[in-house]
Length: 138
Image 1 (cartoon, helix red, strand yellow):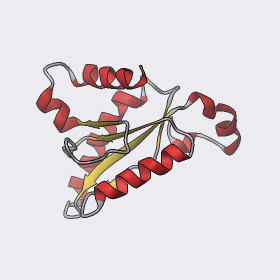
Image 2 (cartoon, helix red, strand yellow):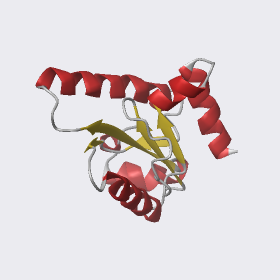
Image 3 (cartoon, helix red, strand yellow):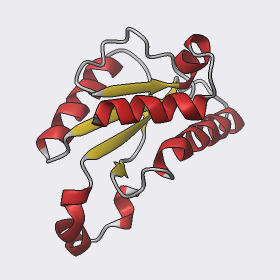
């Protein structure tokens, strides 16, 4: 579910079922034209669907972090720490366009980067995403 799907009351009632926070990371540079920015967001949306739909009763998707630049890794780590301190057991950072292998996002429990998955896996992306998430939870 998306963060905005909860009311204060429904979150208090159901928060025990949602142990995983999904942090989308668009990775825009600021140099994109409006159509390029829209395309990046559409790719991120499509990649998010691979996680949100099958795990909608366990994962809460937070607002996307949009821009990449100096200090992005430190900022992502800070957000992951804060999200965990607010009660989530797991944090997954997900990006459709930015390679995050070796990026130093150490506060995330799992980093799913479409370019990295496509470069290293010989199975469908959907299967890889499922396997990675289920391994995290087991």
